[in-house]
Image 1: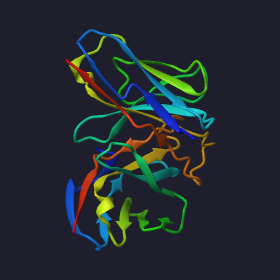
Image 2: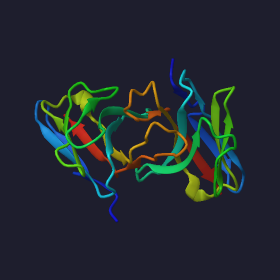
Image 3: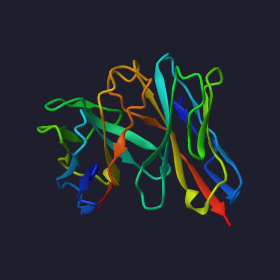
Length: 118
Length: 118
C-alpha cells in the first residue's frame, strides 16, 4: 500500500521556468491538499481539493495553480517559478470529515518534494 | 495573532526521561481538532495523536499522550520514557470546522526540535 506518493523528490529550476508536481493517493480519499514548508516554519496550506474536479485556495495560493482531474491525483503547477518558491512541498490526503471532530480525519502526507529556484 | 504557538524552538532531554512539548492555540470555533505530527530528519510527516474539542478525556497513543486543557487553550504533547529515535521536529496543528471554511486544512505551529541525549 503506497499511501501518498509525490513526484519528483527533488528539482532545481531557474527563475521563470515552469513545472508540475504530481501527487497520487491510493486510499480513495476525497480531500487532497498541497502545503509548503519553509525553514523555521510549520506547513502552510497552498491549495486544496474536496473532490474530483474541485479546487480552492488556501493560505498562500499566489504563484501556484492546481488541478484535480482524477480523484487519486492532485497536481500543483508553478507557471513562472520565483526564488521565493524555494521550499519543500508536501501533499496530503484525507477522507471526507463530515463536519465532525469526533474522529481525527487524519491527513496522510507524502514524502515531500524539495524544490530550489535559482 | 498566531493560531498555533509552540514556544520551545528546541529541547534537549536525557534518554528515558518524560518530555512535554507545549502547544497553545487560538480559535473562536467550538468544533476543532488538534494534532501532533513528528518530522524526523528524513523529512516525512508522521501522525502521532489527535484530540477533538469535544473529547472529555485526554488522548493517548502508546507512549504519547495529549494534555488537553480546553479553558487554557493548550494541547501539550507528553512523551513518556523518551528514546533516541524520538529525536525529531514536532509540530502541533489545528483543524477548525467552521473558520476553516470547509477546507479542513491544518494550521501548523513552527515546531519544536527535540533532541534525546543518551
